[in-house]
Length: 233
Ligand code: FPP
Image (cartoon, rainbow, N blue to C red):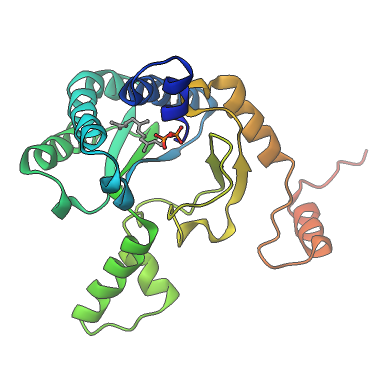
């Protein structure tokens, strides 16, 4: 969700005002996903590296999270959203952790949209923690066993990965899971990322051919064989 800081700078506002607007944008995007039948949305809210930001911004983001939990969970739940918080909880305060667990519990019965909020998360952290858990049990490390230990084991790999704010990097997000995701880079700053911007990304995705290592001819052949046979009269 990149571009909150620039959105605020352009309006001569403090960076935190941009993050606040980012929460609004997240609410709008989650609702738009529900309306479009998207089943899983995973967002990067705070990275393992974001601790290096000015102290004021870090504590502001922590406060924003606590605030969003208090204000948004009921409405999200009414919209059918199930929340999961992904990341290293060891680095978060006791009160924050209790709030995350409570929000997960309060929305656990919902099934229209799984909203994974990555907080104190890094793709490298995730791979390392999964490998460490396997090593601790003396289990074999294979792509399949790692898959089962990753923090996002409860959802399929993402089909589409959108980065906003015009940056063209992965920045330690879903390093393992994005192996075959379609990438879409949007120039919109996150607070400006609206339904039209989401639709643009989905339309771009729908125009892609996903080959998963196969040739284009193979993909087209398997698609045509899975199409319903034409009726003859
Ligand atoms: C990156 O933009 C954004 C962040 C580091 C924070 C994202 C957080 C939110 C959208 C709100 C918090 C979410 C929850 C669930 C509480 P940037 O600040 O790097 O923007 P810039 O590149 O324009 O400086």
